[in-house]
Image 1: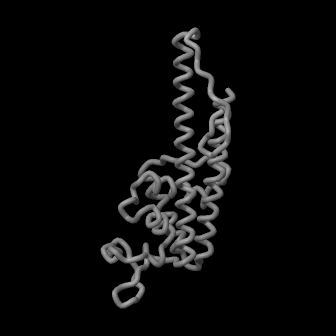
Image 2 (image 1 turned 90 degrees about the vertical axis):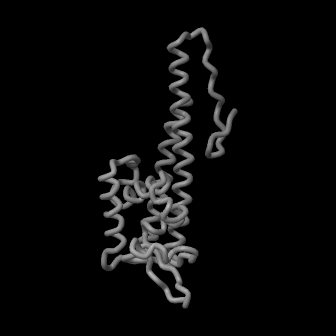
Image 3 (image 1 turned 90 degrees about the horizontal axis):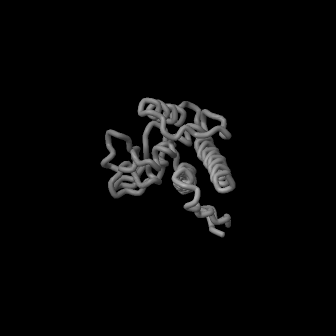
Length: 195
């Protein structure tokens, strides 16, 4: 027995015999490669879920519209930070963030915005807002589509009448989507082991 990424015990995979020839070795290599992809996806979903949870905590403490973050200046006044004054963020603790800003900040700050973790978390968050949570997430949309999704999330965050509770609720919904996606991947992995 082995233990998978979720801590569940799973039967050891049979080692292919050499009597099956080249095609059976090739099938086994393909199966193992697919298993590795699924294991990596499970680990990534775990990281996405943790990031969403941290972002939800930040939004519940302080939520921002029409800016990325809030920080306290030298006199203790709250300042809004966006692309034009990003240097004001240096060395100051973030006291609030918009939806996208919370994800970026909790992933490590503005330098992480293009990381796979942030990009895929944004993909999943957009999916939670606009798609059926039971459907598979489109993980690698093209740059134009990803940019449009980012604008959708920003417009949604900044729309008049939006509340911090709604933004927190979206992040909680995204956690549920991450859980649904995790279940889908685990079923695929189980089918691979049993098949």
